[in-house]
Length: 548
Ligand code: GLU
Image (cartoon, rainbow, N blue to C red; front, side):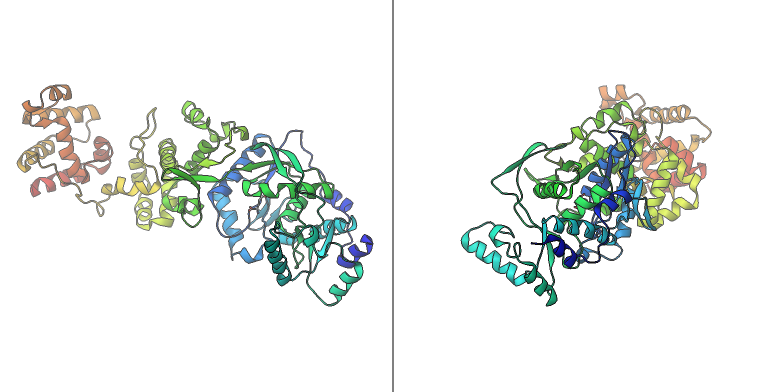
């Protein structure tokens, strides 16, 4: 076969050479050991936790080493593409604070290794497709769908392996005349790789997460270019990650079976392969057994879920860190206020089998994260969440920011901040009673207390309440009421002999709490009364006393 003639026949429009491409996209001028990596998602409109885990791993590896992270949009599968998906993708990654140094942006491309959208790189792929034809390592295949189906059927009948390889690869050794004829007839063709591998052979390979692996060689003549000239993932991966000078490819382990083919491609193209990190899938417990998170069954796989539920970005981020690096939690305990980037992330700590998603743990991490936010941050978080998902809350909080912040400041700061919120949607039921139009008495007094006793306690408090009192004096007054009305002011004494009292000072506080907040559980009462102000506190207590 005159491969020169075939290359010209298939790619007459290609005039550039691989050498010229090398000059256009030269090696990056970076120190030894610097990581260049990428996120390479397909714009399907569905951005999931797996994307984020992959992105975060790449991001940490790049930025901890002073390297480069870029975003490449893998839009070669037009069938799966959804209108606006690229924007959704870019926006979601930005929301989750994956910081790209270059790549696709909503406005276009940024960086000198682009274009960063694969459909715009067609000419580049064709340079290398032509090279492979020239080397005799690629050939056109004019098989129709029906012919492929027929091959499949015959393989089934013969109990042979499925696929286009060996004797089944019916266009592998056609003459140039036959190819010319098919082209002249206007038949569509794909470009296939001419594999010289055999399934009898194994290749050894070290994955940075999975460790040492032994994989079966690839013997398939896989498609490199589809009939519209757009590459398959495999071919684009080799060309792009070489030209964009990727040093580390972090991706889902569903790609592991394709790795032998990828390594063949790198060799045929004369490229040095990158280092690979194949991440195991995200699992969850389903009864007693583990299973992969699924798009259909598990809403928590989608990133939009966390936003809607009101998990701050930082919570999701720290949760994922906890999942990826088992020492993160200890580090965080020892460095509660350190910026998360101070943590030394290590891919070596990642579980080769994948991570287990645990919703309860996520809530736990989130409680800690929110409790450590300062008032301004938490106010900003709640406001941003409410703007999209709870407009009434937004209106209330935005109407008087100082008032809202004074509420959110309760129990914040100090060594042991309160952990009231796991999600931002917990905020509304926590603070609704601070707003008159939302205030309702939702909890009833426990039945063991008689209305007249409660009323007596409430009236006693109205008579002595002075908002100028500090919390010590305020509580002493409540204790004095307790003593006077036959409740224990000393909890120890009460516990020793509960029958000697009507109740304890905690019950007096509870009477006040239900009257003022409408609930049996509420934020710190002294602070709540300070924020509500004398008039409202007294009005609410009196209104309750009148009802009893
Ligand atoms: N587009 C591929 C995917 O979404 C990218 C895999 C890779 O990172 O190479 O699975």
